[in-house]
Length: 193
Image (cartoon, rainbow, N blue to C red; front, side, top):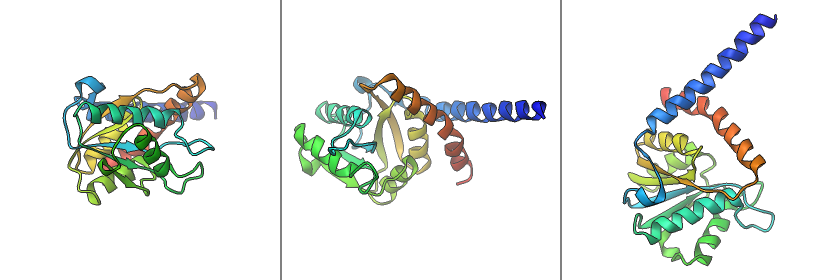
């Protein structure tokens, strides 16, 4: 019994590590820092949790700040915010739009998708509904390989830029674990499209 439990645990670890390595390889050459990012038409900002007052929490603020930096540097011409407009934590789209406008972004340069409920849906809808063929997707560094791989699988020539996060250590640890565990599902989706 113990041996089969150990074998199962080892198999699960192998699957998780293998999936993460696969995403890292697929996104190789497509991960950048803000300053070295290529010039593309649009930056995609996936949603994340908003606070009780409706303002973006640390993960989302980091993503939005990097999108603003890319826009101001002339690396992108517009921003697509994608998230849950009716989420449990609040309206991610309204929160992102308000934040961008408060930070000097012309609302005419921002498009929104309130049904980007997952990274996969964000990428799929960006391509299908908005006709995006070339983009940067901005998210935290640990999420970049998965986000880039999923967007590329949807036909977007995507590069990723890592966003910073002024987060508590526990938040970073929890989200990194979540990313590690999300990799097998993402790779399965890439294989069985």
